[in-house]
Image (cartoon, rainbow, N blue to C red; front, side, top):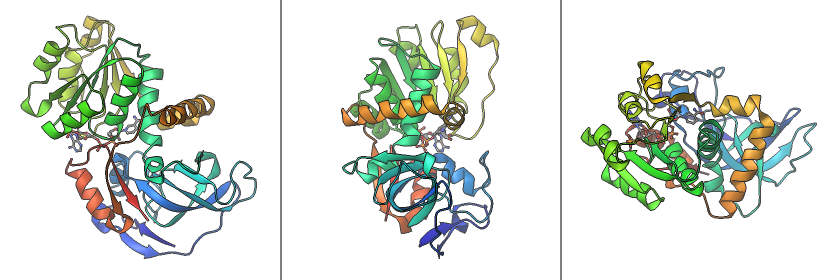
Length: 324
Ligand SMILES: NC(=O)c1ccc[n+]([C@@H]2O[C@H](COP(=O)([O-])OP(=O)(O)OC[C@H]3O[C@@H](n4cnc5c(N)ncnc54)[C@H](OP(=O)(O)O)[C@@H]3O)[C@@H](O)[C@H]2O)c1
């Protein structure tokens, strides 16, 4: 097998494509031949040693991937050789093969496209957990999605629309706003103009959004929170812009509003049954055409560094997928 190896977590430039022995699965594991792997924002942070989870060195990055089971370890009963699976195991995806805990593998029907499967779990699980479970979004409510053309952002638009909400999508370029409209966003804000506050007021007739979905953080957070509706819910999803914002707590009091933390990975660990039920529902929504990953582009696995560069320069719209 071959894989991108991180021996020194100082950034994407230090990754090397290496030949490694193909491992045999241990108890509870499966060996997967990887067909496609998608980039998630933490994949960059983890090879820079800036992510909250720090894998033991050396490791193969690549949190999320899809492929075909090649071998099954002892004690694995729900997966067989030849089964197509999607998996989000945190590492291992940027290569030709990987070992994965069988419990983290989502069996797929044979006709589920591998590229979509590799781009599915993280974005939809996070956005569904955030909007449905944490915010209790109701049909007819207005959702503002920041970073709306990114991975979790595009998923948030699709899920909010599927639930009957009105969606205002905010992003940094006209092309990104256009993509959001094509996904069903009712209105868009290009926040590169520095007009976020006025645009939110105008688009909500002064009332403000009931739910704000924020994977960006930084300067936009306080501006957006000041515009939230009475009884609004502000979803703290991530900090793609870098800085972690601080908020004057009186703002929550003034709007009777809630600041709501979202940590899908921890939810999946602590509440596995609820997470499994959510994934079943999301797979059904995919089958019904309610949700479909937006694929920015696919590149060969060998072009991982170009893929990372594209993500770091904020060019990716939806998900970038590497294929073998
Ligand atoms: N809480 C959870 O459970 C959970 C789960 C998954 C992901 N996350 C977090 O959610 C965030 C987004 O993840 P993602 O995979 O959707 O990433 P992504 O596809 O790269 O999208 C992030 C968006 O953030 C915006 N952005 C603003 N400043 C940026 C900067 N300096 N660099 C890069 N992007 C910037 C970009 O949109 P514009 O150019 O339009 O501003 C971009 O589209 C990350 O912080 C990630 O760690 C959290």
